[in-house]
Image (cartoon, each protein chain N blue to C red):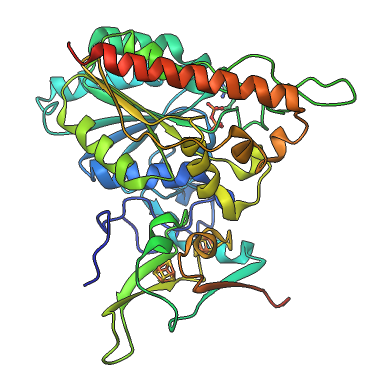
Length: 299
Length: 105
Ligand SMILES: Cc1ncc(C[n+]2csc(CCOP(=O)(O)OP(=O)(O)O)c2C)c(N)n1
Ligand code: SF4
Ligand code: SF4
């Protein structure tokens, strides 16, 4: 037998209807590999509400409850309450799997409520940096400089002018036991983080960077390369926060953000000044993260 | 889980709404493909990186049909599902996968 770096069991089946080269499916594949089939999942309106297939077809080997766009967090508390009533809350993993719009924007209060109530569940935000399912509208998680259909770029340049909201940091502020960021380009790290989350009781939150060829305007074969370069350029740092203590998962010597930006059509309008602004922002955020790691070590 | 897709003649034969046990594996997503990945097994080093990154789980790990080969297992592409995204070819460290144009039918 050849050695694989991640287990071979699959809980996401073939025949799903995601776009060619969809990063969010790689995210799902590895989250379920780590959680296993002893899991109940809830998905709100998002691409992943469509990907399992046209009803009655279904591509996930775990029970799944579809829910409304804004209530993933509340649905998780509901599932946990039902399992408690049946005395099974210690045996079964509860998973919420939502997009960035459903998490950073409309679902934020339900997520906050779930964290504050101490619901024993894992909330995964797969971050494709816009409302993709409805045709690429900007979300709070869309980065500065990106073209979307609601931040269109014409003669008068009008890309998104606000920086990406950090939902991971918002969750750290809730003082929950486990918060992490992960990427589809590093499945072993992603797998290990979901495994760790699985072993912890209480609310857990993982944000997974999931490239989207359709919305980011890159060819589908470079989905993984784009995600990898986001980490290597410090655009999307990988770290975990366990009980308030930061640990950066990898500290790559950074490549310029331009190397990441130039792969994608959504950034192709950016001028040098805008790229410089992004570089400065990324460098500053990285500094801040290093300081947080240092500062929280003594906790 | 069912081993056959539903082929309802009237709506009365449909499963009860919102509850379903029909797997998606009847879906021939291979028809979406315009370019097709082909593995050159003489180059392949069985690292399974292609298997790891396929978003469609269209690559499986199978026993090597070649007797006495260096690797006892190899990756195998299931063209019934492969959408031809090209991630496997792009990520392969030894460039063992070629993307070739599909013939028009
Ligand atoms: C209350 C409500 N408003 C709007 C919609 C329409 N809607 C469905 S999915 C979606 C976008 C989801 O975006 P995101 O959460 O980022 O996930 P993605 O599609 O990017 O995977 C929207 C706006 C809805 N279903 N419910
Ligand atoms: S990535 Fe390339 S070398 Fe590795 S198993 Fe696949 S075809 Fe073989
Ligand atoms: S082309 Fe894409 S879908 Fe087809 S086997 Fe390769 S990675 Fe999988």
